[in-house]
Amino acid sequence: MSDVGLARDAESVADALIEAASLNRGDPNRVGNLLRFGSAGQLVLTGDMHGNIRNFEKLQRFCALERSPGRNVILHELIHTEPDPVERADISIDLLIRAVEWKRKFPDNVYFLLSNHELSQWQGHEITKGGRSVLRDFERGVALRFGKGADKVMQAVVAYIASLSLAAQSANGVFVSHSLPDPLTIEYFDYTVFTRALSDADFRPGGPAYQVVWGRFHSPEVVDYFARRVGAKICVCGHTPQESGYNVVGNLIILASDHAHGVLLPIDLHRPVALEEAVASIRKFVAIE
View 1 (cartoon, rainbow, N blue to C red):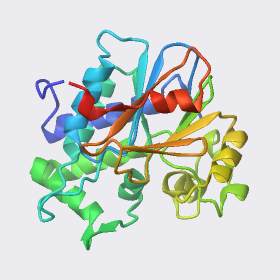
View 2 (view 1 turned 60 degrees about the horizontal axis):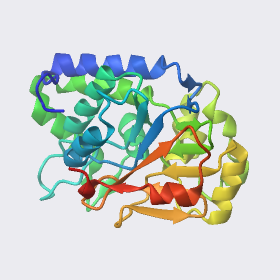
View 3 (view 1 turned 135 degrees about the vertical axis):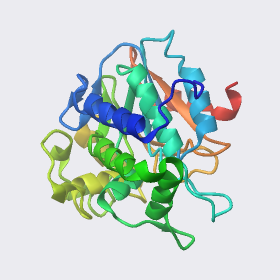
View 4 (view 1 turned 30 degrees about the horizontal axis):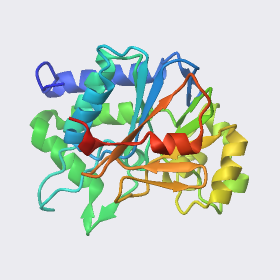
């Protein structure tokens, strides 16, 4: 998808984000805070993208939604790139705009999940990397793009983030979320967070929605316990950086899509899922023309 036709002025971008938020909330596949997919078509899964437009464009070419109506794609952690050099602004708002326009064009094929970076931008939970404020760098990039209209765009970004689902699940046993709860919290984790109405407390540190997007250090035993609780055969997440593009921990596949070795994972929904087959289906972005 080229830049032609994409919203670029503050008013149009804000409108696009608000429309995407409405589509997210009203999605017929959504039950509570969980996206459910049936036994037809294909689900294309990604990891963190962090403003990587090159990989996003390759993802669009791979999905070819114009001629593949049975294909669905799940995106998360689109914002907060690491500028190089560090003094440059974070302009990952550009990727978010592209993704939102893709959603508007294909509302029944493009889906989003909440991540820790989006949650932090929404809730004001500071993230620092190399001594810089990730949240302020993103806001600076929005200001650079939209000038006096930046506040309007940021308000729409917050509305969009607040509309995001927490997880997705397929009929053939795949559970997708940005991460899984920490090992220390897994036994008393509130699994109703995926289906009930949420409160502000759910998104605060220690709350179950917060745990879903911030969890780390998973063991095969923890993954197996979580998968059994949610009725999944395999789990697929992002969140934890993967230099080679992916890692496997028990029945968990961790994907990264934000660098030159990044990957995507297509899952056929019409047949039983197996971990080994899923791992063999992982595609590197460098192999996509």
